[in-house]
Length: 419
Image (cartoon, rainbow, N blue to C red; front, side, top):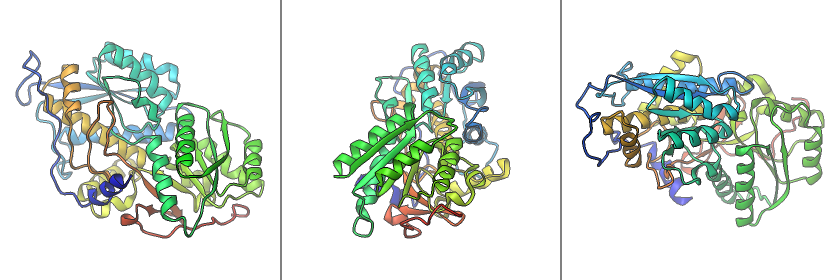
């Protein structure tokens, strides 16, 4: 964790040029010189409709902007464009259904002739989609799915540029340890969706709690798109923890906060992860109930203050889509840029050569507050990490790491009743 904090602190000041992966494979019929690959089709899977469509569309927009940058559309953004061809993005709507994941990959590869696939936002959809890509021998690059066990399946075509639920739990407990003299946390409760990402987050949180001598008073799961969370909130109130760890998407986040307010229950601290708190509609949907919520996320607007490339990307994203980058869109942008740089290094549309280039990736400059991107043998970026933010009035401020801190935590949070 100390290494991750050091990476976070130094990455914002990095000015080194981007460097992509390289392949040691021999020449082939599709290993070519500059500008001769022509159109390079990349498949993209995101939930563009359904209950998490706002987050899915936002994540897709991050990928879309990265393709434009790679294709040289925005020369003011200091990232090298492709010289070996032009990327054509082929998108499909998973509708948030894991059963669609495998079929979506089949369609993208067989019909659209995609040479690599990126996606799929929700961990459950990413699970099925990436397993089908593995069977087909197609690189699958993920930016914004958090379930840690996605990188523990022994897949050789799987690559994730972003951090995991384990990283989020480790970040939270490192931060809690750093403030324990002011805000001691001895007991916590966990509430989460009963799906791949939620259960993985709960496991990681409980494991880290045990390592840090913190008691988990309750572990509460529920089905996504719930219509009533009264019993779950009553259990939280009965356990009376020092802090609540939560993971859910936006509809459930709104219901959860409203239910706590209606029942007159406010925890000392609400420590969130998942799409709900990073959804671009969060403040619009939950209103004042979101104030003083705390979340782990990979992006904060403060990143742009010391990273000119991040600032240029964020400005273009706002011009194109009317919102600033958030953790999801920044991560999917980064994932697509990484895939593009691997294609540039491979100088080939052969999936295996792209895979080899991804394995050799060593990106030293990104828009993220990380030291870069370098994959381990599991396809997991070892340099990805999280920030801890709190919503103060209308702005997300950085609480951790200390080197980037912009405010002191509001703890306990103000009562939810009457906001």
